[in-house]
Image (cartoon, rainbow, N blue to C red; front, top):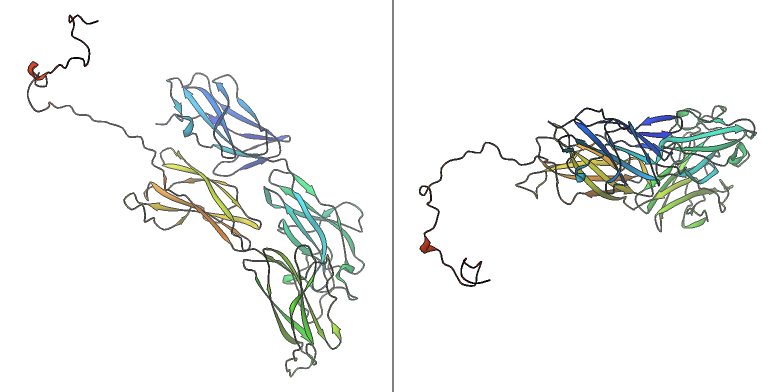
Amino acid sequence: MRPALPLVLLVALAGPAWAQLPSEGRTSYSRDDRIRIPFELRAGGRATKVVLYYSFEGGPWLEHESARAGEKRDFLFRADREGTYGFATMTYFSDGTSDPPRKDQLTEQRRAVFDKTPPRVNSVRAVARADGAPGLEWDIVDDHFDPKGIKLEFRWDGQGQYRPIERGVALGPRDSRHWELKPTDRMQVRVVATDRAGNRTDSDPVWVSGKDGGGDVPPKLPVANGASSGPRETDAPATGARAIQPTLTYLKTKTVQLHVNAVVGPSGLTKATLYWADEKLDWQKHKDEVGPKLAPETTTPDKPRMVPVDFTFQAPRDGLYHFVIVVENHRGANRRVPTRGTPGDVQVMVDETKPAVEIISTRVAPNGERGAVVDIRWKATDANMGPDPVKLEYAAVRADRPGEPGEWKAITPNWIDNVGQHTWTAPTGESHLFLIRVTCRDRAGNEGKAETPMPVNVDLAIPGVEGVDVAPGKGGGPGAMIPEMSDIKITPGIGPSPRGSGRD
């Protein structure tokens, strides 16, 4: 029976309240460098001392402090740099044993990330949608992003307090929103970003107004699904109007296909021209033009006539690309040629690069009477990492057929956040050898994988001997193994000299 460990709780000192660190592969985040570790080690029991160990970024275990029974009831750990810290304890008993028996058998009991760096605002800018609806686009970067940490706040005409512009809307760190505004509407909008540790950044406010849409007619189109997403409602759209909700599209190919329908009259389409720009927003004209094209025949004079227009753009490299399609008929173009600094009506992130994935370690530790647990550590990076991008799997390996692993099965039922660590309870009955695989998928659909080169052995049983029987041997009675004197040969100069030989 394994002796009971002391009750150990890890608490990060974050402001006036203490937050207990969760277990089961989850991580706690704090912007305070102090971590208080309460424990209970009663005097008079078998346990005489507890030692706290810590590791930084999955490195070696280092002893922090020890305490004997009855001395004190908590440790105070102070992080000396930002990063991920793991904690484990070793308990000593009055009979001279310890649990675990050796330092190299320590397994992480709790983990905390010390992070005092607030999210970084790369860009926040006002944009206009293809239908003229004004909006905001932003790009926020952080190593420990909170999936619910992006909020938008606004105030009319730059006066009064900022208020939430939308509630219950999931926003990403690189995203955009558009609203329906009247020509006289004018508001300041800012992005509020908070990471998992509670660090907060407020962007500089950006002016967004109804006139940003361009043209003489204010936009009156609804947003997607027919519901307004802006701070004010607008008039109902005209019959036949269709909402255009631009999004940033991720492609894992450099070949970008653009398909639009040009609305024309009976005279048809004179010309369609594609303009493109990279993230620097220096616009260039695409080499190919489309047109002229005749208008399709129709028996309903009032019905809009659609002329399909297709372009194929070959991106020179990975990155963000903006596109604008200008269509013309005998009366002129539908819009101005885009100028430098103007964002595109369509935005595409070309990404052919797979995420980089590395399995750092797979530590096996006992799990009481339920077998073993494996502490899986990995590192996955990508420029366009999405939410919940990681999948963990295992394959059982038979000892007699090491080159024929079984099918891959899920360690986690769904894709999970890229936290870099997961504690897996190894299944019993399938095998004691397992291959482990980590897969990371980015927003474009590229997948990078890493697999343990050798199977992980979860057999922690220590061999022993029990039930020894003693029986008389065969080949003679007592003294049978003692050789006769004639069988012993003494070679001079080898070994010790006989007593009385006169040698020194």
